Length: 328
Image (cartoon, rainbow, N blue to C red; front, top):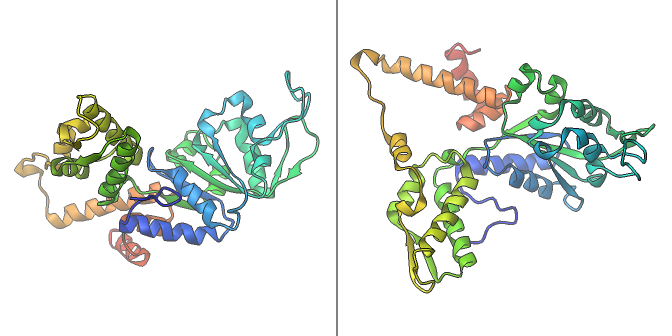
């Protein structure tokens, strides 16, 4: 199976709808905030957004905000002039300069030091940067794509993230679905990673047994696509270490995957309940719907259209349901 240029594999409705949404967003210059759990592939979706935009022939510069030392974060992003601090022996351009005319991808933006957030806000507001130690600002033409696995409203509430910056970045929040929400995409991705492992290890044939396939589909994948890739790679190496010849057909069984069978079984099992704990089904359904709608709205920063897409319903129907459930 050949992966597309951006590495995004899958045919699930939730993924295809997301890709359509990104294609529309690519035609705009709006800041985009990618939301999702660790391992869902936010970087791949950022690259796709850039590739489909009119900036596709200009730089895409990636910054891991979590890896920026607080003392150097401002200089890394905005640059500095000679003499700005001890050791600044010459002028140095920052990441905004490198991305000028193109796109700057701020990965894990929720980890950005508070001291730098005000300067980033200024750049978003007026398109200007000021190098550390410089007297005058410089104009830059940069589109911002940010990503986080944090619930930023909580960070705002806790005083860790500026509310004004959050609202600037979240003009268009885009939730990236977790792997467990993508159905048969698990199997498509698993086949792809199996083939990659076969090529890397020089094997004649590498397969997943039917039982292993079922385990993969049942597992909740808390680490998402990244975890799936690591599980397949580790299983192939483990099987090869058992002295199986590379020229043979190697079949991966469930035990080789190293997944906790108890976790898989627990996901499929219904919790034990006493008679007293039951409630009318209509009441239980309403409570479940209320919880899911609230949770989706929190995840999407209050954006009803994004929440509707995440829940797999039409936005107008979501509004009607919310009114019936007295959520509006």
